[in-house]
Image 1 (cartoon, rainbow, N blue to C red):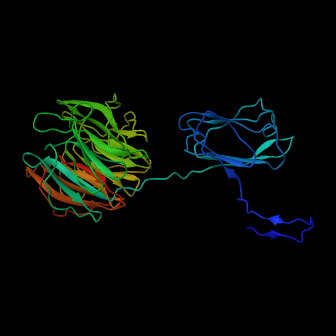
Image 2 (image 1 turned 60 degrees about the vertical axis):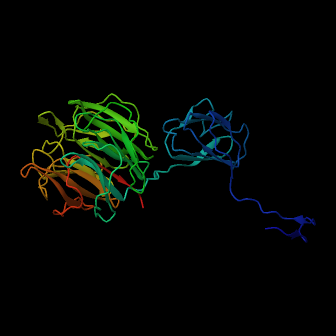
Image 3 (image 1 turned 120 degrees about the vertical axis):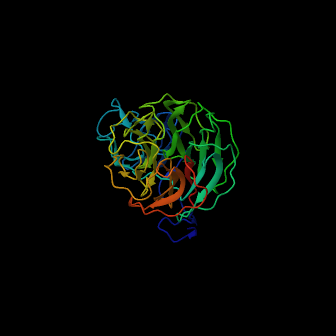
Amino acid sequence: MSGLVKDNIFGSSGSIIAAAGGLSWQPIVTGSTVTVSAGKGYFINTSSNACTITLPSSAEAGDQIILTDYARTWGTNAITIDSNGLKFQGETDAYVVDYDTSGQAVNLIYSGSTVGWTPASDMVSALEPVAPLPTKGIFAFGNDGSVTNVKNLLGNNGVIASDVSGVGTARQNLAGTTYGTDKALFAYGRAGSPYLSMKNLVNNSGVVSSDVSGVGTNREGCRGMAVGLDGAALIAFGAISGSRTNISSTVNSAGVISADVTGVGTARQDAGPSRYGVGLGAIAFGGIGGSNLSTKNLVNTSGVVGSDVTGVGTARTKLAAACYGGDKGVFAYGTPATSVKNLMSNTGVIAADVSGVGKVRRSLKAATYDSDKVAFAYGFNDDDNANLNVKNLCSNTGVISADVTGVGTAREDAGVASYSVA
């Protein structure tokens, strides 16, 4: 407020100018050192380096300073407080004071010379922003008797649309994944005998772009999934000219595939990939020549593949998997011929076999849609020696429904990914 001051006890007059309430917040601190002042708040960004914070050399009781973890990185690069000759919680400045928890905020109050600076509050914000999960899916490429680049979009209602003429090199047994939260890409695969490393980006409207020269070793049977909290993804395992591999490549939020990373875990192809928890993933089952596995490898938020974990459930290959319920996974179908499913918890634990529903098949794919449901579609039935366009929807509680006559070209070994958050 403002106005004329008169008739006051000091007998003076003038203007009253409103002052901003609370602390004066300062520009974001990114340096390795900063000297702070009382009555101010500071966002400390330690994304690139740790930071030493020097408190004022003199203070009065009631002086206040707030420090907050701007980028949630204090757990990686901590802050160190130099009390600059004054006490900190009763101890001299010879003591080391570190704050090393991501998401932390410290409210410091000077209490006087006996105790000095003391945290009036020291809290951690546990809530991290979580990107919305994809609502639509895309099945593309595959083999319908010969390799194809046809695509079919999956709506947020679980309906698969008719064939759309494809873009890019026709191929099969490729990897697909969400990236950048709402986009997708397809990469690698096989066209006849040649193994490929090309990629095709998919925008958030489901439009597939033309071929882009790939990065890393040409291969087929690798699998992809989104990991982390910033739109990244992972592509791992597969076969190189018939030899199985455990190499992996990360995908950044712009869809750029990294160079090969030496793998961890049993080399194999045609495993099942699924997200779980928040930003975590698992790759499970798969095949090595004539041997099938029930092994799983957990993947952290940075896309690092963990070592083998003894699996649960029927060892199999050429199955499909996807995230359901927002934070859990479902693995189903595969060969040896089965329609069995295994649910995975939000902590990455795979449960025992559950009798399956639907047509027994292999070489199918699964996509998350409507953020928390899954559509299994396409594949090959060995008894009939025929490609399929059957789909089975999986609810957000992991229940797989009966067969629905599919739409589009019956085929096996298509690529799949989820995209869009609209």
